[in-house]
Image (cartoon, rainbow, N blue to C red; front, side, top):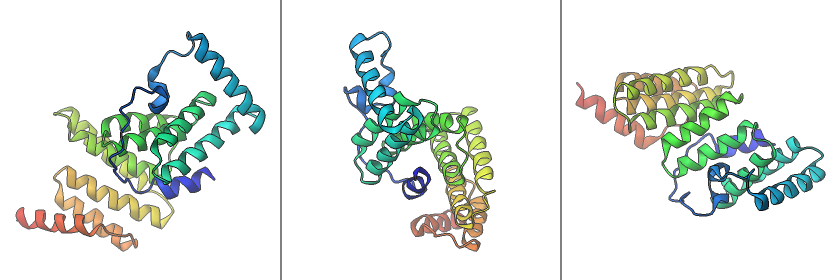
Amino acid sequence: MIKQLILKTCLFLIFTSSSLASTDSSLLPMYGGEDRKNNTELLKKDNEFIVKSTRSFSSREHAAEGYIERAFEMYGQNNFNKAMQRFNQAWLLNPDNAYIYLGYGLLYNNEKKSCKAVAMFMQAYNKGLKESGFLADYAYTTASCALTKENPLQKELFSDANDLHEQSSQSSNQALQAYAYHSWAKSYFLQNDFSNSKKMLEQSKILGGKTDVQFEQSLKERLMESK
C-alpha cells in the first residue's frame, strides 16, 4: 500500500506555497528536535500514544506503516500540516522507517528548501530506500541544492546528483527509467550542461517518457544560444 502511495505522490515534485515555518512542533520534522525524553508531560503522552497504537496495529512497526499511509494520503490531498503530523507520529513509533524521511523531504521540497530536503532524502537512502523514482527525485533535489552553494561544494553536489541519476536509470521498469532520464535532463540543465541535457531528454523520449514542454523549449533556446 505504501509503495502505491509513493508512486502517486512522489514521482513528480510539485512545489507549493505551503509553509513549514511554525511554532507548533508537531508541524516540524521530528518535532523540531524537541527534547521529549526529558519532558515528563510529553513523554507520558508519547508513551500513551505508542501503547494505544501498538495495541491497534499489533506492533510498533505496523502502526508506523499505518500512519505513514495516512500521511501520504494527506500529502496527496495537499493537506501538508496533517501529513507532517502523521509522519511525526510514525517517527515516534519507528524512527528507522525510511519512508518517514522521504515524507519529510517531500514536505521540505514543497517549501523549495532543497538542501533541507536533501538531508532528509539522505536519511531515507541510508535507511534502505533505493526505489528508482525516489532516487531520481533525490538526485534532482541535490542538483537544486547545489545551485545555492559555492565551489567546490557545488561541484561535489552536482557530481552526487549525477551518480544518483545513474543509479535511478538502472531500473527495469521502462516508465521509471524514462522518468529518471527526464529528471537527469533537467538536472544537467541546472548544471548548464545543455548537450548532456539533450541526450538525456532524447533517451527519455525513446523510452516513451512524458516531456515537460516548457522545459524542452527552454533547452532548445539554450542550445541555440550556445552555438
